[in-house]
Image 1 (cartoon, one colour):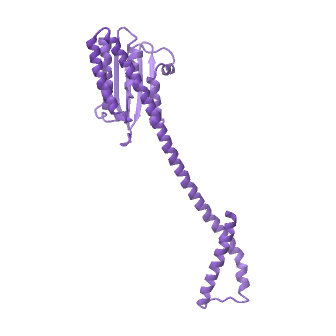
Image 2: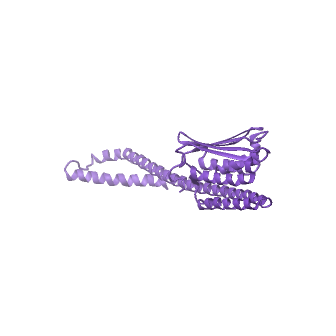
Length: 287
């Protein structure tokens, strides 16, 4: 059909423009059809007609290319929206996975304390209520300020210190000016939990958990370390024990698409060090 149109439209166009052209020439007494000029006009027609056909195809190809490009961009935009929705859904699943995990561990701590010290159990319950209230209020947000995230970390550490007493110490060192930096909600707390569970809890003397945060370029470096037992063997083995490290790794991957850094180092009897390199987010990161 396109081929037929490529012949008919240029033919009609050329006939029409030729009649109009020569009519105007005749009107201005410039040129008249005669038995001598008519063969010249007809001889020139095939070449002009072929030129019109080529013009038609050039215009057709340009419009087809533009239409294809527009449909391609629309399709890419639609795929982008679908991918963004899938990513957000996956992040919500990861977050929902993390919250019950944390709650279960906290309730297990309270249950253990109820048998030996009711007052301490009540204190932990109150602190847990404060922590969960804060987390639920932020439930729809993907990112929070570093200051907010560290508030959850401090509350969690205070809960655990009630449990471990003088066996657990902690230090949070944050560079001035980094408090407002946007970080994923509950991205640091699982790392602190991992340090306590796999580092401090397994040695009788206890130990110290350190949280450091420093601005570097347009990003933030967060290190969570402990001086506990550490791990013997491949670091990859740690990702199969519980969901803390694996969850954090997956969330960083989904949120930053390879732009973030995630590193775990551990040595037997020298504890763990987990390093996050978090890129700066836009002002609309939670939209």
